Image (cartoon, rainbow, N blue to C red; front, side):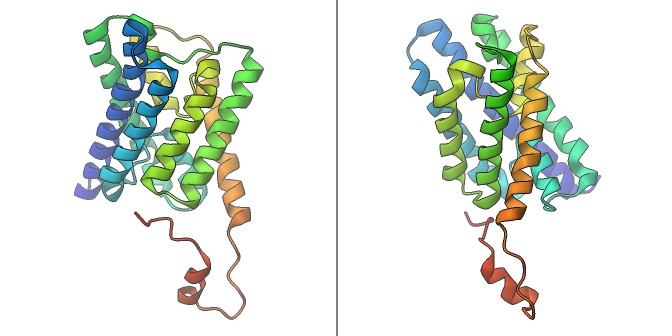
Length: 228
């Protein structure tokens, strides 16, 4: 395995570990103490994503989400051959973080497991739309504070209904550690559908290269998504 890929996979594991440790960890602390409140938990999720992207994007892109990896692949920005290794690293980080939470808090708050509060159709539609907007904005911007802000916004809005996962790894880790698998398929199928829709919408929003324009000149018409 190339050293660059090894570093990237390590970054994905650590980044997803941080996301699950601090995000669902905040939900567990809220369940135990009531000190954070719903908005406090949403803010922890957003701040964690912001910090992870700022620190690890130069190493791996800081996907920390199988749906993000799929969206980037469909958008032509990530090699297909690395999708499975990235997803494996993300799931490993999520499971390790949830296991640490289990050791620290027991099954308090079901370790932040995501379970629909309403109907499956409502949960599926919400998770699809939440993931769609998160990944569309990530594809169009990628700035740490923008992506983290969207995560906090969506968690504040939909957290009480679906857990606002938008991320199969975030849901998988707590589900495995807690044994709570209620409607778990929703937290894979909906984010992956949202990822595909985000990649398609991004393609529609990206201007075609004007005829007679050099590739270098055409870059002036495309937002710099790698700006930090």
